[in-house]
Length: 123
Image 1 (cartoon, one colour):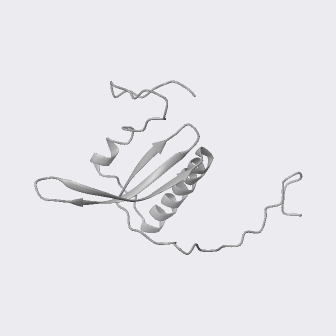
Image 2 (image 1 turned 90 degrees about the vertical axis):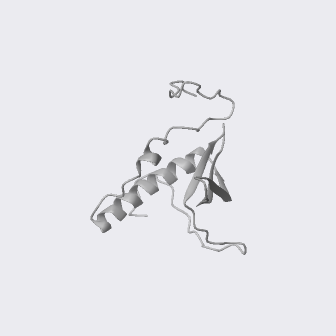
Image 3 (image 1 turned 180 degrees about the horizontal axis):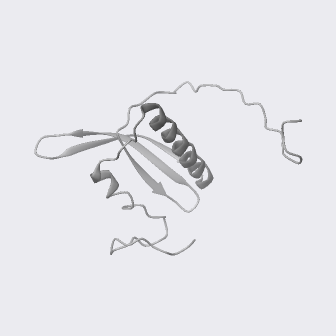
């Protein structure tokens, strides 16, 4: 094909089909679970209750490879850039979300950090 670099594999044609149990769910919270060979995004909906309590109802878990998670991350970065351009303003995270960005993500088989410091160990 003339549009592809020399030596590149041709991309297969992909047919889109929707599963019978496909559904749309609104989410306002998520958790990331990292494993040695897989990653999960668990989406849910948090409802504020009385007495400064909240109920977190987890609705769906998406399990993927680390490569797919990285690809998703890059696609989301581009999507946010396009959204901010369309809005004419940045999407600003509330302070309570920014301060918790690096908490609670442990790869299975590694001990959690007890001091709140990030681990410098490479896998």
